[in-house]
Length: 106
Image 1: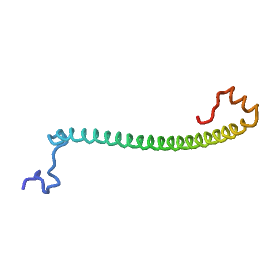
Image 2: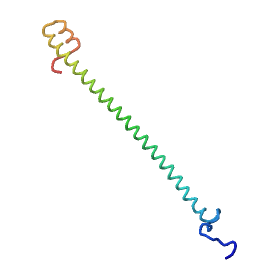
Image 3: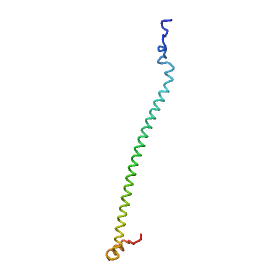
Image 4: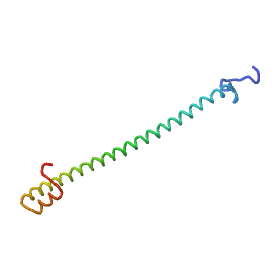
């Protein structure tokens, strides 16, 4: 054996400026680009779920507002029905109905 000959396979490696390292530069570039893309995708998914949660909260608020509006409308209709019944015997109520053009059946 020669004194400079490698004795094991661990000693047989490519030099730091060898062709193998130069070929792997593109691999590391792709790893970095893919990592950035994955992080961007995670950010977009997080944002999408936050928007979905905000829209769900907004929709729930809209449903509550519609329920309140229906309740108020039912109360106004009940008051108007009572007012129409009162106008049959009260001339002042009849005058108010005529003034605001309120008629039964509308």
